[in-house]
Image (cartoon, rainbow, N blue to C red):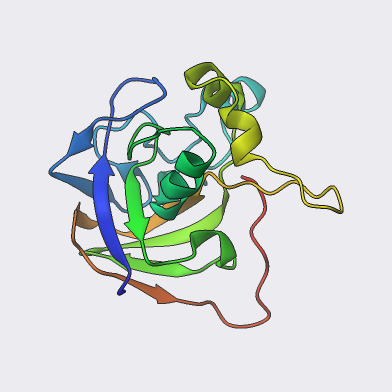
Length: 179
């Protein structure tokens, strides 16, 4: 399967879920037009409280559709947009990408900055869900499954069914960490 966009989402409110849209417009260096998290500096409330001047490395949130199937197996019915992502993807292992990967999506380019760090809002949305998206392996390592964050390197319109191409950065590759 070629990597594709399953759906796109945007919300001007600082809520948890984002409604589906026909298309979204990515603005270079800003994020998704009309989204509460768009901006040059960080817009996530907890991060603003700590330092409102830090750069916004979380302009665009992408989640892989495959996560929803995984969660359904654990008894959590979650639909695209409900975890607050802007772009739901299929066919690309987002969590395995290194920092700096360029995703060409529709007309736009998103540079992957790191992993989304799930918070208490996920547990408030669905009790038990936080544990499912933050599993620990046998060694005790926590795995963050709720997608990746990125910045917009080239603006443009993104729609469901747009193809995604993955351009890895030069080596050495650095694994994603939370941003």
